[in-house]
Image (cartoon, rainbow, N blue to C red):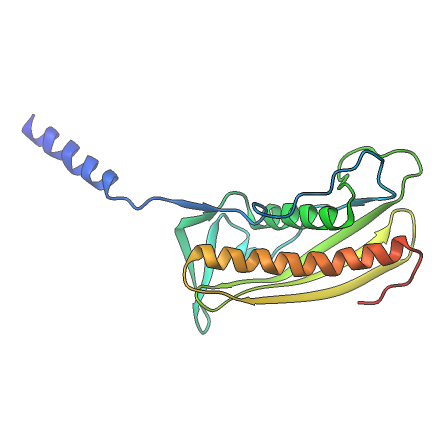
Length: 195
């Protein structure tokens, strides 16, 4: 009996000393879409975002040296990075344009819908140094063969700590969403925007 009680005490002590997990989101704190009573002049559709396989996990993957990365078990995204980036971009772009993201949602007949495809090629996190998102994205009016394909590289200097790192990624998302919104706005106005 004494052995069992000792084993339980050791197990409980181990559980009590485990560090807490911290969860982060890229979309919390993003600007809310403008609310209007009238239907938007056009809609956007932002399907799933692709990210590099090495960061496609809930744990934060951080660069700690030349060619070295660490997987942080206690520091996690609330959803996979592809979902986090997609939701943050959707909120930022629809908020800036005053429209609605209608991905997987029916739209009014003949309503213009601009499809935005995003491929994140680099998603780098270097605590105390920088947060970087390198994305290739395209915009096309649904049903039109014309497509605009561009690349945005947003690197933000960050302070120490994981909160600062995530805030840097949010600023990167904001910069990329501004580039995309500018392209959508130009296409919707009948122009031929450039990258």
